[in-house]
Length: 347
Image 1 (tube, rainbow, N blue to C red):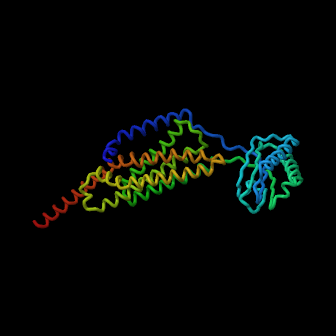
Image 2 (image 1 turned 180 degrees about the vertical axis):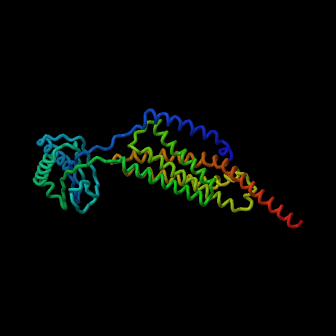
């Protein structure tokens, strides 16, 4: 640990190089922004059965839909089949009881497709299904045919609000650290937060990772918040160690090294929990295309871990040494004044 604490110039140089390069690219090229999800319309055939549909029945459903589209002159831009749906996706499908063998056939159309044409296609598909005895003979079968408009997803405003909320939480945490653990710990946390925020922004700018508008700000705020959490773990141990009378004989580097040695496992555990959480969220949203949003959070988590393990402890050695020195000067002045007052009283 002492060796890592002595490498502050190395950690500072790494951060400086990445951040400066990132600022230059941000100024010249900005971020590689992904377009927001455009408006579209969907045509869904939801089939809720006790016995799972066989391949022949599923193929028949597709044939009914695509024949109806051809009659109306409709051209779909996407098709997806999803099994095991527990809830209706389209709001017009209404409510029903899921069986566990649910099947969804979804077609996607451009936003300017006529609702009248979709309504005609819906009526044709429903008529084809009602005329198919194989479907009617399926025990407990419920079929829903619907179409809906998916409006444009305005991610900018929600992402910006999320970034502000996370950043405010990080600032509140820093204020708490200043009150409970001292100004020196708060300054270290602030340096780590600012470094991690700019480091995250720089990585997105340098690597040209596609992001939605304002998403880099959200990731930067997440990095700052993660950094504060890791540093708060260190501060708790530093405060506990400071209560030991023997702590006064330790140097700033020895105190920080002891605290880091005792909390490294906790920091790694917190990082592991965060990693698993992000991975689970990405996996759960893979079908919706939102996995990349959570995957970007990995960069923020990595930046926070970098500061928590390397940069922040090294910086705090210098800051703690400065504040310890000022405290010793004040104590020496106070002791000198007491001795002087005692001497004057005796004389």
